[in-house]
Length: 424
Image 1 (cartoon, helix red, strand yellow):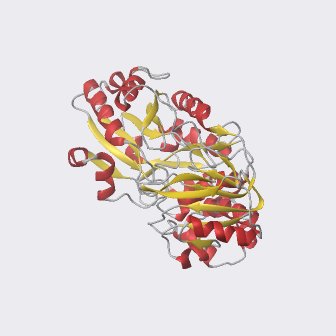
Image 2 (image 1 turned 60 degrees about the vertical axis):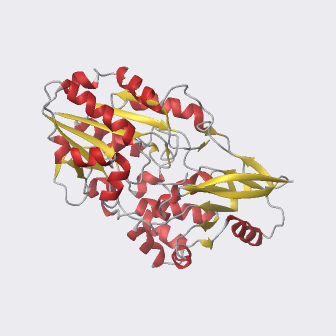
């Protein structure tokens, strides 16, 4: 008898059929089953009405002429069509004459397109509001201080010039920052490339606390908190989403206090024990996080945490945007020896960090311990250049995995959404 599973892939799903005797475990968070008993709008309204550690946004906006709202870019499933109208309303209730700018926090990602802005915010907001897309190379930037780790923190001048700086975002497990959300809107969100490079250095990535679900003693997180405090950010609205990208929780207020409350809620729903298997099948949760191979490394890290050494990871990610990182791709295209790539990365000082190095470093660790098969729409040559095996379907990928392992009935663990679970 077989077990049927459905895995998110782009904006659709892939069907997976496995013999019950092979299926060792299905690891899922409780995000899918959790029911808040309220509408998404009610959840956001209640969060804004009960901020952690600050006055209400309406009160904070009183007398503030220049207001900047930082928001997530196209790589994040932020439900801004729901959240942004509430933020704009509260600001204008506090000061109807406020000069508001929405600043898209791209970090070091490519610029968000007009089409992506329309999809994120809707026609009315895009046409009515002033929207600026952050550029980590052009700035302009201002130096706001040196973090305890020695990182020169340079942030977008537009944000620093605001009388009131706030951010919206969402919280999910993050493979080296512990969790997304909160302070990440500032660093890497609106930081200069040099500041992001230092924060994502080989030394920081290699630190044992730089992993999903950990904030305490995490040097990357500590750097980000320093940057957030230095920016003068006074308010955040962060949401927690289920697998349908619907809001099931929200927190608002102080950048640290509100974020900690959101992290606590999310952790209660997504921490799971490892179920080591020969094969682990996972995804990046579908659109928008599975648009490229670069982002798909996130789901692979979760899979690696429950795949036995020498086992096979099958990642299903649409990757319609290709590799997603030019330096990331070039690193593997120029050197067939994964071990040599990692050795070179680990030899670099913080100031020598190159774009996409952190992703390459984490990816190398995965490749050196596991075989990775990518089920995607990316070209076969691209996938193989990135030291992976290519497959056009889950069925074919399973056949490949069995051949690689030399086993007819290997054990299989399935992570339907690899970015929504913390394996610990």
